[in-house]
Amino acid sequence: MTSGVARVGDVDLAYQVEGPRGAPALVFAGSLGTTATMWAPQVLALRGRYRTVTYDARGHGSSGAPAGPYTVADLGGDVVGLLDTLGIARASLCGLSLGGMAAMWVAAHAPDRVDRLVLACTAPELGPAARWIERAAAVRASGTAAILPALAPRWFTPEFAIEHGDVLDGIEAMLVSCSDEGYASCCEAIATMDLADDVRTISAPTLVIAGAADPVTPPAVALALALAIPGASLAVIPGASHLANLEQPARFTAALDAHLGGDAAERGAAARRAVVGDAHVDRAERQTTGLTAANAAFAAARESLDSLGEEDPR
Image (cartoon, rainbow, N blue to C red; front, top):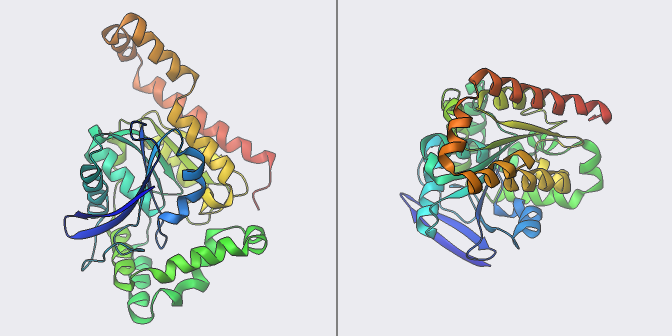
């Protein structure tokens, strides 16, 4: 593992890189109030085949906390700047919650830097804005520890929190390690965020992941996001709340890994390109209408939501 600090614009970003240098790059962007450590299960599982990059967002963990307020463009720009520092021209992005918002911005505004995209437990808008302004004020007044009682029940299902107190304790420790000003400024970034139009321009193959029991960004929100992104697919993970990658690490990682590798149709398309050439395949793909693509995305999303009936998420 390589650890370092990258100067990106006005902020020092703490990062870690693992995996073979020549492997495809995979960047993980974390949730509000967490550090790069939240991705430990996924990095452990995938670092042998990917060059994984994790980092602490501005105002979090060991990264700097420049004066706020911040915007989602600031957070997305940090990702692009980190890629520049590490000499990575193109990477797949996996972002959860706040990290997903940053990843959406990058995919919409720097599409040439994104290979594949995974958006977990996130949304292009997350109002009402007043709620985030109030949280920012509370943290500035009393620190991040003061909001723990309100936030903890949203991260995991009650059963998981009882059985895995060590995981809950770890997330709580990440939250209280945040800069109060940095955390509050990220709240203000969410308050002013509106990526509803941006996500419709995303061209990277996209997977949206939802936790079936997530009260922050429930499956219906994930379905709307998947339908807004051309060709996106949806996976709903049973028995998971907002921090789905930690509550159901095996299911989350399997969905992520499958998307990064491409499904059977995508592997077949790659083979066709190798045999008959890009021009031929491009002509064929242009014959697919927008309505056909939208119907396919809707059918996939509905199938994923219908599967929730197999297990009660409560």
